Amino acid sequence: MRTVLLTHCRHYTGPGAFSVMRDAGFRLACHDAGFTDPAAREAFAAAHPGALALAAQDPAGIARETLDRLGVPEAVVSNDIYPITKRPIEEIPPEDFDATYAAVVRFPILLSQALLPAMKARGSGAFVFITSAREWQPETGFAVPTTLRAATTAFAKALARETAPFGLQVNVVQPNYLYSELYYPRARFIDDPEGRARIAATVPAGRLGRPEEIGELIAFLASGKSPFTTGQVIPFTGGWP
Image 1 (cartoon, rainbow, N blue to C red):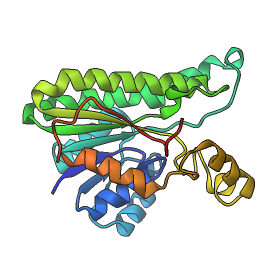
Image 2: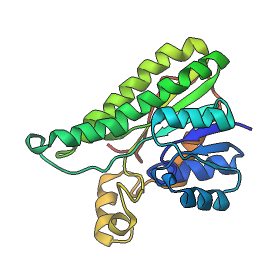
Image 3: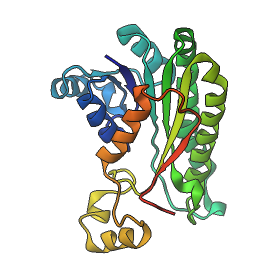
Image 4: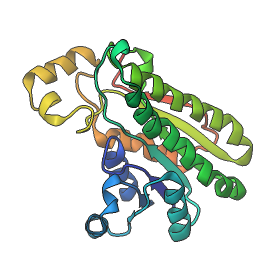
């Protein structure tokens, strides 16, 4: 049974990745900010038998709890999130850069550092970083996520080059126009006709991506079935831009 560590399992690409990997028989160690509450962890475990809800929140703690309870994971899906706010560049407060950096750049780098020694020693494993396709066509007002998601993509490329001799694979999935309540909520972009029309006019596929669709892609990259596939950046955008 393949063990996978999935961060922010209830947000962004987390729900789709979780459901597909669970159905494929993966053993899942799940991080989520809400799991600081023991009742939330118990409820999650009851709803998803066999999945481990981690109490730890910081990267070192997440790595340590995973290693202690399930051993060295075969794959790590770094599904990192932070709310975005539209602002002109000259009006971006420094704390917005700092908080976004901590969540979508520093967090996955520290998590990788914490798990690398054990994964390199074993000589196999996969990292899947979920970033963003925004860098392909930067949108006015979103310089912070565009810049910092690109930074994590660059880190993943460097990690892929450095760890390939140790049998590790590192790949990036770059979503945009994926349904999630954090970035493209249902009420605004699916249920509302005006929002649906805006998406149809922007995305060649004519709709938002579905959670299970990106889940299938993530599950393949985490599966270890194609270990020669490393250092790749895969947009998940329905043909955009």
